Length: 164
Image (cartoon, rainbow, N blue to C red; front, side):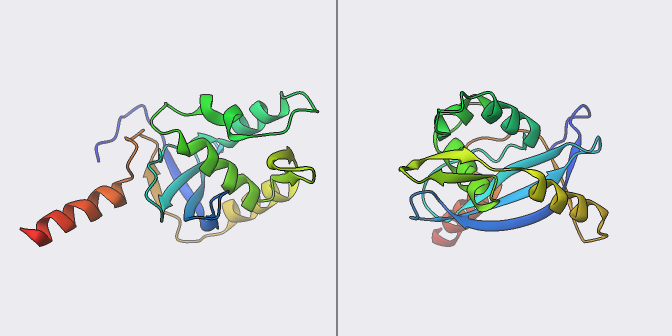
């Protein structure tokens, strides 16, 4: 993968898995930090067949978007769509599933399809701990890629090569 010299690298602090909101597949998401200490999130894998964008999204952009919603508006993936480059309609829902897993949102009791914000301090404290650890976090480019993740492209290529 080529890297733009203007594109900073994101250090992966944590990789975790969760169910999609529908529960039909498993997602893998990552929490990362840029050199200027901005927290980022991204979806990196999907066990189902749906396409997604694996671009990094700044957590503060997500939080700002959701905090600007009127208090009586339940949060749905619709409100996150503008954060992505339009590669896949699945990505905002997948991000919402990761936010739910991270306990940054919770389902409304009267409408399980809509969510409300939860205090982000526990999440940010966890990120602080991860930043100070000397783990084996690796750096990845923030370069935006197409709707299919590199892992899925490689797997498809291996399948094609195995049949020839």
